[in-house]
Amino acid sequence: MPFTFRVLESQQDLNEFYEQVLIPSFPLSELVDKDEFIESCENGYLHVIGALADDEIIAGAVGTTPTQEGVMMLLYLALKPGLRGGGVGGGLLDHAVAAWRELFNPTIIMAEVEHPTYHKASEDHGDPAARLRFYARHGGKILDIPYFQPAIREGDPPVPALMLVTLWVAPQAFVDDDLVAAWPLRGALRREVVDTCPDDFGPALRVEESLASDSVKLWEPSELDSVPVGLFD
Image (cartoon, rainbow, N blue to C red):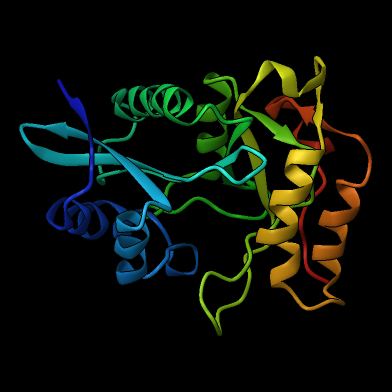
């Protein structure tokens, strides 16, 4: 299927992408409200690159503006139902990472990925194991952090057992071949994860503890059993 890429900025494009691509692809606990999504795009916090076929939005990548430490998150990479495995997702990921590197010069670009041991495959939302293999084919490595997703909206629970997978690490951020500097992650995750939780929330404290040293290990996806898991007490 031939497709092209375009930055999605208009309300019409963002509405179409949210309704026809994001909603079928993610459980509500992992998806921001549509009004909040569109507002975040319009105020420049979120950046969306779409893949289009015959002027129809068939996929999109949603990234955050980098933090002051240069940490950027790929929040969503989603395709319309039935399009997985056709090369659209891989082409879109490579295009988005290259575009964001040029535009923002980030220190790290990473993605949230469900741990396949704790999140089962579903027809609607895909297979976490296949998703991890997809990112591995694009050079993704797993950070040694017992990560979980904070609650997206007030009253919702946080989501346990997610992983942070690196999609790009700037050369200066490497301490060794399999170690990255902790300081960019420490600042970003303290604000976005630790400080959003109660002071005595054990999983948040474990995230902070994992960033206490100077560096963070990178695990190959094939070493999944060695990755710490952000489970709740």
